[in-house]
Structures are given as structure tokens and as C-alpha cells.
Image 1 (cartoon, rainbow, N blue to C red):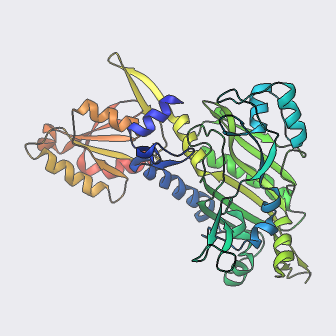
Image 2 (image 1 turned 135 degrees about the horizontal axis):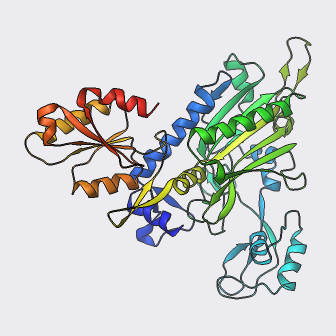
Length: 452
């Protein structure tokens, strides 16, 4: 994992946030290269889950919502984690994580009293300083803020930063139905930031305070929900193949009834083999009709659908595929991280799919003379209209290859003195390092074939 973190900072994928001030736990900034890759993932997700289908819509809902949304959704009551504090250093820890890591047991479903007893019986101390731990208590994970110019009860209102994006879809269900020509079954997708007051060590960007979520809610008729659940499970498997994650690094885990969310009829979580073990990457849940029923009850708004055949009204069931963008970004880095040896030296390269790699093509002038750089820059300007390109003329050709290898650039095109005479260039493949000579006029056709 240290190598991934080092590469991420060195090559501009991810930086520690607020680093010049000592940083802030579980916050990270995406650098120039990382931002390109992150946007590529989002664009491919929208393409795969929305644009390639005929039954999907896309929205972008607000981060700040009426507080009643979180009361109706159950987050005010249920969005909590069991915490214990150190009496000496004052650090706070997830009690369930401590017990699972130290005792190697599952504590899902245990009460705070039971977890406190396990901590005391096994003489578990603070991992930071060895101090005594407090009794286990539940803390709500939502970040609070206020709206209004003055912080008092008359002029301000307590709000929460959204802990998930799903509720923005549910509360817009009626608007979506009325403003779009959609019929059940159909889905609504959204990508956006959510905010969770996590205190547990994050394993780089695996667990952060403001994760970006890509999820969709697919509305179906009750009785058809399990059939559509299977369809979406198959579609998710195709998604991971589509973006190039190796099958052997994934496993699909059926969540037991007493471990899944209270509203879920069925849940399957997708785990990825990170350097720190198999951990959750995404999830698929059958949420039943819980969300729309709750919002209908708390708002007084009718959120049912009229069946055109039977003329009866019903509240749809919901199938929810949900993906953590930051976790998927990290999984792609880990899955693609590769090493080999070139001339006795170690070469590091990211074997990323061309769909998500920051750049698909790098163009190099071998030297800045004899109009070689003019030809190279002309090729760059022409190719960048169709491909994600970078122009790189700094350092030796070997160093440029290594630099592009480490950020996952798929092909490198080198313009040299031969190019002046026969209008040919060298194309080098990232994974095999094989170099082939081609006419400049054929480059677009060749690259199109490579990136089909």
C-alpha cells in the first residue's frame, strides 16, 4: 500500500489535503492526473449505466436538504456507529472495528453493553497510547451545519450535510414522474459527494470524510423485484469487466438477513482484494418500498404510481446498485499496479484500461531541432481532438517513457529524424513495450482500432 500512496503523490494522482498545515485526517485532494482519471471513471459510469440504456435518467440533487428528509429516511435514528474514547489521549475509535481486528470475531448486531463487556473482559486498551477506554456509545455520523445569518434559535436552522445521495432521488420521485415520459420499470442515477463523520483510520482513500458516490435507484413493481435484482447483479459484473478489473480480485458476498440494513430484502456486496485485504467496493440492495413509503408518510405527498391496466395505485420497490467512486479509483490503482525489469532496472507501470487512464496517448519529439518538435506538436493538436493526449518533451526519452508508464498512458508516439524523410513515427505499447513504425497519416485509424 505504501508504494501506491507514494506513486499517487509523486505522479499527481492524490495528495494529502491541507498538507502544508499538517494535514487533516481522512481527507485527500485529487491532483491533476488523478482528477483526469476520476472524471474518466465518472464519464464511463454514466455511459455504461445511463447512456447505453433506454430506461435510465440522470439527476444532480442538492447537498443540503430539509432536515425532515433525514428523519423520514431513518438517518437521524439509525445512522450511527459504536464509539469508544481513550481517557488518556482522548482519541476516539470504532469499537466494532477494534474488536474485529483484535479478537478476529464478528460483532454485527451486538449491543453497546455487549461490546463494552468484550473490551473489558479482553483487557483491550487504546491502540494509540495504551490508555483505558470508555464504555461504548453510539454517535450519529452526519455532519451538522447551520443556515441563517446569526447562530441562534430564531435566525438559524440546524441542517445536515447529506450522508448519502439516494434520498435526493426519492424526494424528487414525483417531479421526475411528472416532468419525464417514464414508465415502470425505470431508474434514476446520480453522482455526488456525501459526508460521513468517520473517525477510523482510512487506508488511504478507502475511508474518507467526503466520499463521492455513484448510485442509482431502479423502480420496479413488487413481485418483479427479485428478477430485476438478478438482472442488475449480472450488469454490475459486466461493469467491472468493462473497466478492466480482474475477476480474481473480486468476490460477491451475499449478506445475511441479520447483518443487512433493516429495510433491505436482499443485499449482495462486491469485495475487492486491496493490499489490506478483501474490503467492500460496491453494493446491490433491494430496498423494497421503504423509502418512498416513509417520504410519503412524513411529507403527506402521494408517491404512488397508477397502473394503467388495473387502475390501482402502488408504491414501487427499489433496486439500488451503489458504488464508491474513491474506492473504485483506489481499486483500479491497486489492480493495475505492475512491475517488470528493463535493462536491469525495475519498471513500474499502471496497466489501466484506455477507458479510464488519465491519458491514452503521449506524443514525444525526440529532440528540439530540425523541425521535429513542429511535426510532433502538429500531431498532438490533431490527435487531441479524438483522444486524451499529452505532449511531453522534457528529459531523455527513457525518462519520458517511465513517466508515462507510471501514470498509465497506453501508447507513446515518438517523432524522430526519420519522420522528416518518410513521414513515419514510432508507436510504443505500454504493457509490452513493443515499438512499431507507422505512417503519420494512419495514426488516427491505428489508435481507433487500439481503443475500440
